Figure (cartoon, rainbow, N blue to C red):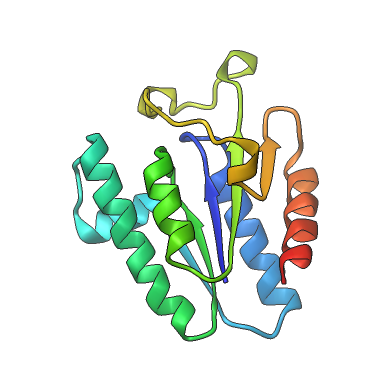
Length: 155
């Protein structure tokens, strides 16, 4: 199974993905892999932040995740996934995918990476995702509880 956390930079993807990773390692007898967009770009040296560059990078990430999932492991992905096209690629290429969209509102308090926001980000429709979390209004613990509950419904 793939669990994809996506949203603008500083929306809480890495924080919540790591927290969920910890929950899985502590509570479930299954291997779990964690993929982070920033580290992925570093490893593959992709510095192309154009729309095409982002989509190619995300397709490559999905292909790597496919390998890890083929081992019957859980794969957690923490990537911006700004375009519907790349999210569709993710959902079309995996049997089981849980998609978590994290949103926050910088006008309620900046987090420091707003200059890296994707200006043409495709906001998902509710039917595209399994869970939408407003990380401006909710604590990390509240978000993690909802992620765990949604995950339990998916398995």
